[in-house]
Image (cartoon, rainbow, N blue to C red; front, side, top):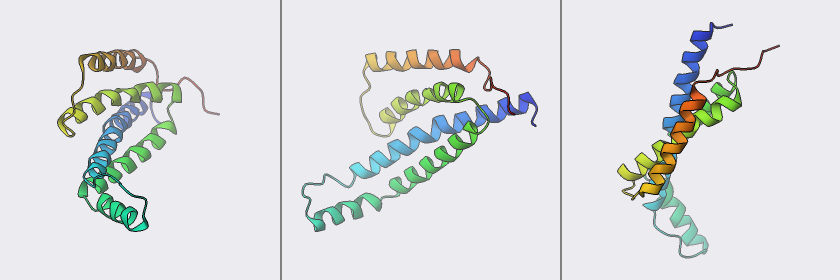
Amino acid sequence: MKAPSQLHLKTYILVAIVILFGPLGNVLVGKGVKSAGELNSWAPAAVFNFFWHAFTPPTIWLGIASLLTFFVAYMLVLSWADYSFVQPATSASYAVVAILSVFLLHEIVKPTQWAGVAIICLGVFIVGNTSPRTTNRD
């Protein structure tokens, strides 16, 4: 079994990966799909054309790679840390989503939305000061 300090370090590194790569993947996939334009018809040729344009931009594939990285890190961290720690700690990704939306998608984030992100981050700070593992392994 790993020493508690090694377990904490490993947990925090993977939580940081989850916090970064989940939102990054979602934003990149969103940006790539938006570049394909709207689906205006359900005719088979129009649907095929939409999917062809949606899956050819590099942002889609970077987004998929980011989401795969997120998913693997999330599974790994849940294999040893409590869900009651991991889920609230990864809520810091809401701040990353807001930041990426401003810089990559050129969206406007309103002050009330930033206030909501700040409240979530405060909660993450409180949860982050608890132990990642409160249960004993048998």
